[in-house]
Length: 487
Image (tube, rainbow, N blue to C red; front, side):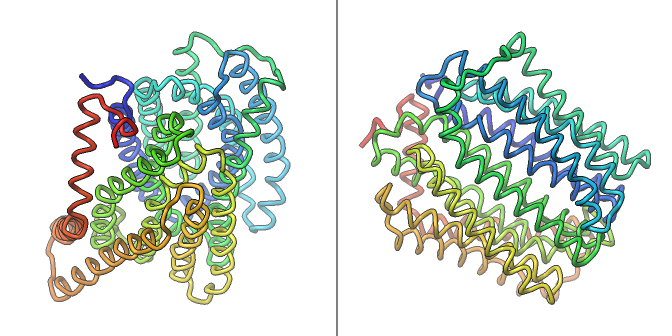
């Protein structure tokens, strides 16, 4: 009989929530962007992005520390909740004061009311983080998944209704406020009330010490993404920002949702292995290989069918998006290959590794954006896509000693993955260069389906022994065995 708290079962429930989140996120980007247009969507994306910088930082200050804490108790949760309330209130005030200078800097006076309208999200996000950590620490992924899915679906419904009714940028505001507010309310109902408002600094200190580098990492990542979007808008205008926001949000939705699914399930279950470095490295490597086998063919399919897919989903006026997608999807390969090593390093308490990696990656991305700015949006996509290689290199350089991972082997694996996706894209382009499709949906299915099949077949052929090991591992987990119990 399968262990009800096994990683496979947690991954299944989180996977269902992830699939729903993925559908909702894609529908949000596709339908709302198509209804309100590039200019309004660009403005909404800049406002939401600046707000998310604050939310992610505040939320990260306590979340991972609570999940990992070896001395977890109700007082520690209450202290984290009280701290989040204070931090959220202070951050909301700071963002409100910064709204006018930011609008003047970008020469977009409409940004002020948009930023002010997003402010409740900061408080909602800050107060929800400890409640989410409580559920994840208990491995209660089914409950969390159901509530996150329900609140996101409700928010999407409001956003679509407002967009169809001509509310423009405010449809995104309404969607996000309802989603975050309802999630906080629903998790409060689940636990039958909010934690007590108290702050015991002795209980809170270990949480903040562990989470500080993770929070700084989240700040660096979000600041880079939103600054990147803001600079695109400043360099090329709101319409270009809208195009970039659509492409980056599509990739971020797919890649980000998948990454968060893997990260949080892995963090919860791999914490038990923190005293056994060899087992931790083995589990991280094995699950990374499974992630690549599942996700890389999907990336190849989307990249191969990008042009007809964008035309089908968005119609005319979004011509720059397909080229942006391809470069950003190539960057996603680096993200997937480093994700489990990143989790393992955090489990070992070396979260500064992720901070260093993302800081270096962000600096390179912004420097390359300035350098390649004469190339327009294409230069921005190249800069962002290739910058992920720096983060991958930093993480595996430090993980080489901490986890006894072979950098050469990891480099060869990365080279194979990149060669597969680039080779498949080149082959698809050559095969369909003279083909004219009467219907866009046929073009998407033909190009994307063939690319998926070719990528999957190539990966299986090149890593046949590894695929066999993955199958054996999954079978063992279904029988209730843990990976670290086996040699």
